[in-house]
Image 1 (tube, rainbow, N blue to C red):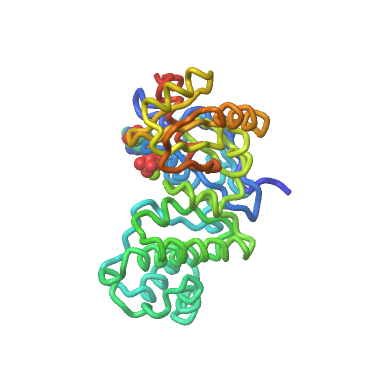
Image 2 (cartoon, protein in one colour):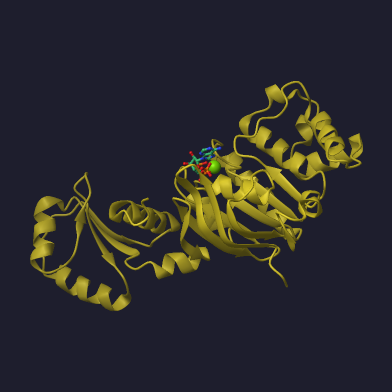
Length: 311
Ligand SMILES: Nc1ncnc2c1ncn2[C@@H]1O[C@H](COP(=O)(O)OP(=O)(O)OP(=O)(O)O)[C@@H](O)[C@H]1O
Ligand SMILES: [Mg+2]
């Protein structure tokens, strides 16, 4: 089956800034695809190009089989959009907002349809409350409800859970999973690495407009070496020196914990054998597995240090 989104060499410049810099990606239908990256990486610019809100400077992008420059009219009615920092209309209730949104996009959405959509996003109990009285999580749900008026095949959710409490965030994860379960494709941007790890089939990490890593969350964690870490709590400078004397690469945290990153089981055995002969007073010692957050910090931190992507 043809990918739902295909991007080749996409570029968007603002003056001297390459907000999106030769980005290529492809999103298969029925999956959750997450764009990750630090502030200003170009995530919103990328999704806004795909949503038809911005014109690319160069490159090609096809959405649902159509070129975004040539036949956007074919695409518009088949996508749903939750913009970053979405705010509902203050004075409209969720029901009114969904009906109004349908009218705006020439969809025949009556009050009963609106209630069904609100039920789907878990907002029926707030159907008649003024927009300004909704909580943060309820506002996002309303945003998603509005994006669903045209029964879109493809949904763009730009930071849908930013600022929500952990319970509200998890509730929204449930909703996103359900929407995916209905066969929709979802492009998600988020700053919550755990969220990306939990929800995504594929992840692309962007930095300064470029893709710096791409794969399933599991692939990214596995590919990045040194992702199992031995934590020696309270080993301090003395511990660090002792390890380094024995040829073990280690780093020290500000709280005095010493960390040793281990790439594979063979390396782990060698390190453990060396550790066995070291007398170190420790508060605690344990290993922790890598997460997408570690990968992200390592990749984004490395490119910042090396200046690879500057200019
Ligand atoms: N209209 C514009 N004019 C000039 N620069 C812009 C414009 N829109 C975005 N930029 C710049 O492009 C870069 C990418 O912005 P973008 O909003 O795509 O980042 P982002 O990855 O979504 O960041 P965040 O995580 O903070 O939402 C930023 O440096 C931003 O300042
Ligand atoms: Mg953004």
